[in-house]
Amino acid sequence: MRKAKTTSGRASSRTGRYWSAAVTRHSDAMTIAKGVFQRDDPNSIARSLKRAAEHSNRRKSSPFRSAISLLNFYINRAGKNLPARRRNILERAKGALRSLYGK
Image 1 (spheres, one colour):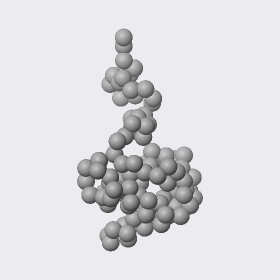
Image 2 (image 1 turned 180 degrees about the horizontal axis):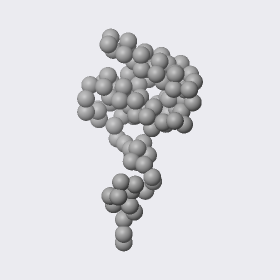
Image 3 (image 1 turned 90 degrees about the vertical axis):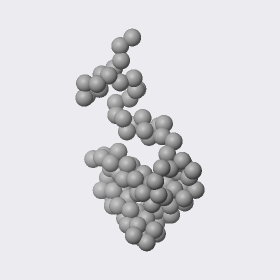
Image 4 (image 1 turned 45 degrees about the horizontal axis):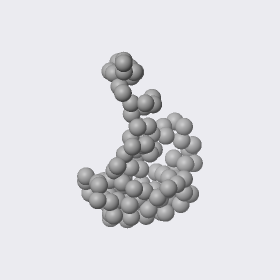
């Protein structure tokens, strides 16, 4: 059986078009609350990510780095399909997360 080719020309056995879709579906990085990125309050998003990062046994770096990385991953994954209002809320959540960690 032949493996599907990706846009880079390398063979891939993954289903789906993008590697980030597979990460979103199968990641074992942290367990976050369902719908956390759909909240309208940046402080609520930041507090939830902080709680998840600090309680996770599966993260590889500091809680702050894990939380900010997860937020950045979500923003980058949404790309140009992310509405400006939602992007603004998530960017403010990054600032709130930094202040929660004193950075």
